[in-house]
Length: 340
Ligand code: GLY
Image (cartoon, rainbow, N blue to C red; front, side, top):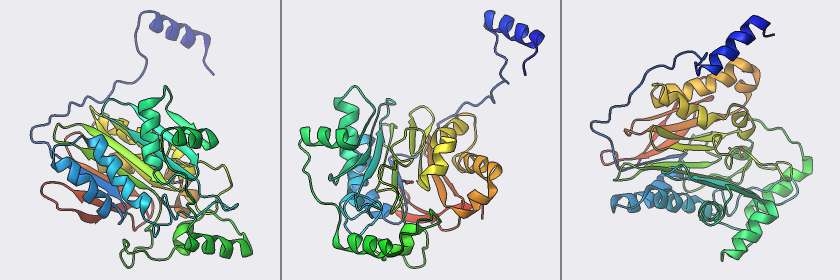
């Protein structure tokens, strides 16, 4: 409880414009030799996505165009059962997509619970560029997409329908680690032995002008309740870009991430002077400290890049991989450190 004297002190301080907040760690990022262009993205399917983004970055294109082109690759791949076409449906059989995009000016667009449109990321970009809003959801998002010329199609592939019908036999819903992966077959884009190869494509890029953008897209948790929206379309949870500081994206159980506004937290920690890996770890630590049993039972991972091109990642569980493409690193997979 605030006592009267403290309250008066606070009021007096506010009146004179004095801040009672602790002094911020002083940090000034010096960029002497930035790494650019650069693109990073989550999971093994990030390799193919990076290759598409690199085409644009290497030709002097804008980071925003690169991340949109990159994310469209797994969205169109019917063998990837956690994004776009062929995504595993909700428990009622609907494939519903979440996506978000942010540019170097801090503009953002997102769609949530979007059905029947493969390239949710491109609809998110249209929301950013053609509407006065940041997010459109459900039927409204679909109507908007159709008005912009996107084609309606069935996203439920025979393989995903079969997995859903198999699941319906027990209809036993436990949002545990890798529920998607337990049901999804290996895809041509996966590498053997990667038990966490699932979930969201999150992509961050720096172009030759040194500007940052980011994008993410997912069909969300397999067999979720109809209407469930995850972290991916939420600015500051699934994705956050600040062109002065850096950018971050997330993969894993969205419910856990939304509670800590994960990617906003990561970027703010980088602003305070933490490097990207430390920032990703510290953001996850909030979850680990608050609810260790829950944190131990799920996967959640962050991937971040600082304005100077320094890259970092951290995960709750082992097995989170991400793809890196820079002038010196021709598209390779790396594995992050983890708590458990
Ligand atoms: N991270 C994706 C989701 O929870 O929907």
